[in-house]
View 1 (cartoon, one colour):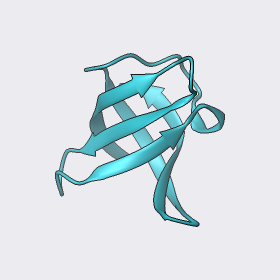
View 2: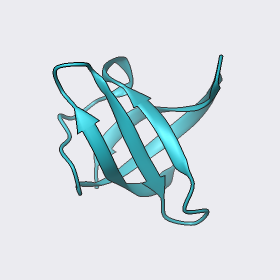
View 3: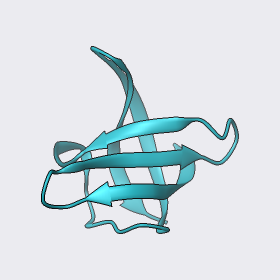
View 4: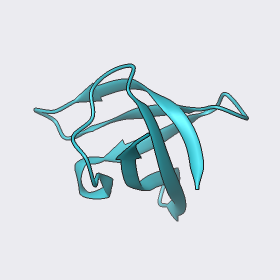
Length: 63
């Protein structure tokens, strides 16, 4: 699993971005990929899968 920090998450719209700890790249996260409820600046662990527009975070859990 990868680790990172929630950069932005809009609960009303159901999506946001995670900053990966190693690469410092943004990874898209959708509400369907969440295991735990997340908020901005939460430390998280996650897996990634290829989506239509790039990498998507899945199995996102608070670290």
